[in-house]
Image (tube, rainbow, N blue to C red; front, side):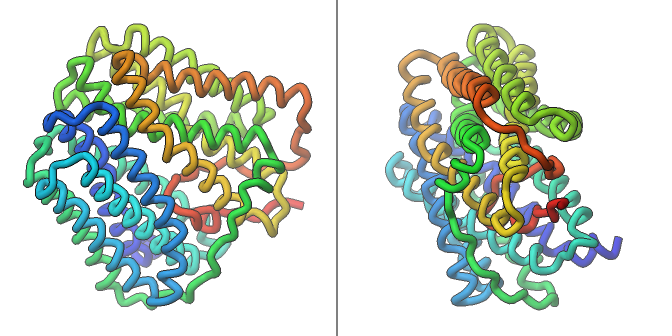
Length: 406
């Protein structure tokens, strides 16, 4: 209990950041549809978010080094609030894309500050418990954020005002805490080419996760709208995927620690592809079918990033672990920038089922690549324990790291 209390301010800030940022994406999608934006323009908003997110991951460590953790967090929170509040003032897709880039930068910066602060305050005796609590906070707040869509009217100043209030509220726990800010750690070096050479399959898995998950989260609300779900149904649809991902963590983690991770990753990819093809063919026939499809998609697709990361870490030397996880986040971001726009263009051209056909194609290619790698690649001699990894900032690998055995 003392451990929870000591990190309460940081974790509460994470909850509020997740509530605001997690609700903004689907709210923008539904608001764009209500304002007459094209599906491609709505997808552009998702891609713009990850452009800003990418820049934020780069800029945040340098800002913290220049002005400190608390001031950097305040700057990012203010940027997020401005980005949310300005939406109703300027209802234009190009303007909203710029605002989403600003909020993406703010989200990445806020997570980087919090995770750097947590990393500096934990040691190996408390790391496991702190990481466990962080996982619960991340998933629970994300689930609540999706549920908020049911009560936030699209294209409403009130809705964006609520999101902006959450951005402002996240300032209070951190800035009112009496805990001293830690010294600024060095920004992680990004060497994605080395990460890809270390484990081509893991890099491919992360790239596919970065291409499929943001496409679902950013364009999924448009899919729900196109197949006839109301606001409450869309919120349930998005939440079902997160519930599926949460339900998968323990069993998939157990399997991934017992079996060859290449088999697990390939199996998850094949199951994801099959599920998405089923949703594309029949997912819009009823609300129940859509919810079941989303849950199954989350069950198989959400763990792919964490399994890929664990597989890559099996081959990493201890002094490369933190840089490896930052590099995997970089690869994830490359996929996340392009995929929402690509998925929205396909949906606009071929109908709602094209979203899941696009994701199925990505996972099908990953499954084939996994089979090819099993034929020519090497098996890891040592294992790092599987763990759920949130895709939040380049420094998350330092927070989540464990000592390698041997």
